[in-house]
Image (cartoon, rainbow, N blue to C red; front, side, top):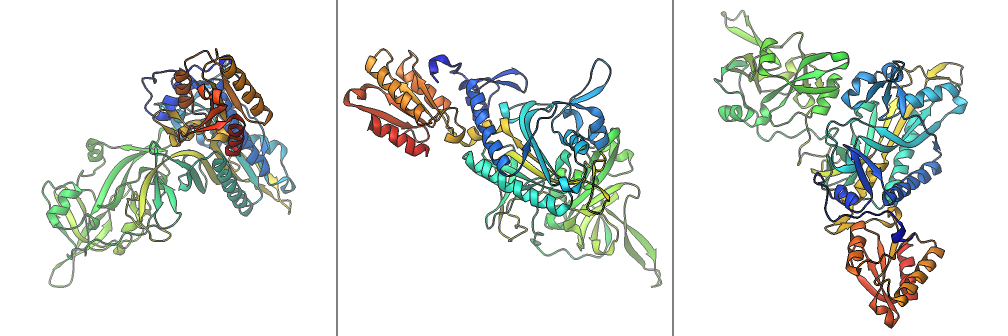
Length: 587
């Protein structure tokens, strides 16, 4: 292909709203063009990269035994209602009616559609397992689309779905897809991590994300310095923290704490480490069909609430803050809320009062962090203004609901090896789920097993953000001059830059090298534009072709330059040697 014949509208200035390198360089390099908020057209260079990414994905999936289909972009709303996701998915699901009043959605993912198709044609265990996928357009009505292809409303995604007779076979396929995804992202030249993740609105029993490491990533990843443990912050676990100091010793009692509401103030008031305090976090949990309730989450004062974990613990779609007025209307005392009450009994010992704990707030939902289980000598809100309880013993209370709701901190101990955990940033480019019967049961998708018994399909689902990968590659491969594409996904593997197209010798040599590379199977672009040499080299650096062969003034000595975009190192070589060296680098 010749540069002079292609539509490659490179720009000097970045879009005003662009802050990430990928957004800046994809627009400036002439890869994409914004037509509406979160919606982009792919120009010729962008489409070439998109096709190369798609080809790698397809090659590896097909090699793993998957079969490609293509489902409708528009999905009947009835399927989403039957699966229970119509309300749960929230405002990001674009709903609309056709002229006849039939309800539809623009699919952000296609579990329902694929299940509906498979149930029509697969009826026996003899037809299983089956793994079907598509690489197709999706739509998610983002409230704040930003960062170019990183968080758009319209995007291209690979979504695959596997169907099995039992859980064991589903897990086998899940592991195969993890291995396949590793091959896909390795071929693209990406540095990535496979992390444990939250299943979110997709649902299911377990999931893993594939994260491209980049400082600009929106996701926080927890990694271990001593082993390969990695998890999204929303799903990360830790070893139970060791007490930083001995617990204060006190008999169970109520203690006057006038105006002391915060954990920091309470720690100073009692001269104790926050580890021995009970923190109360009140949230409003939102459910399907507009239902909501106030939930009290309790954890150690040294910890912070992880909202995704907390929402999952109560089965909520999301959590939102609660005002003090709403808490007071519910009979709660802001700043002094606790999970227990003390009850005074008059004992037989000369009328001396005996205190015991009871679970507080009957009828109000509470969840305690698992690290509070069995905790003793704790200090918690007394559910009375200006009072806290001391000497609280959670081991004395039965039927308290516990869950992992605390956010893992840097420095916490790894749940596998005990090593030190730390944070890094990542961009999610793939996500695989163990669905089980999450969709097959409500959609009544069943098969006959070997005993003639009808059973629901056991499923897995597997996604890759195909268009997002263009942005992820650049976030990991760029400098202050432009993009640096790895050869397998580059728009062209090399560009031949003719320094002066008016020089007949340079033009003839450039054309000859171009033909030689084409015959050698190299994806090559000939920059034959009648532009200044410096302008052409700026475009080479901005667009990010892996290599350039520069035909310039050194041609009089029979030599050309081979330039590496990654290092910007130049090698002066005879023409034949330059071609051979390039072929060697491209493998």
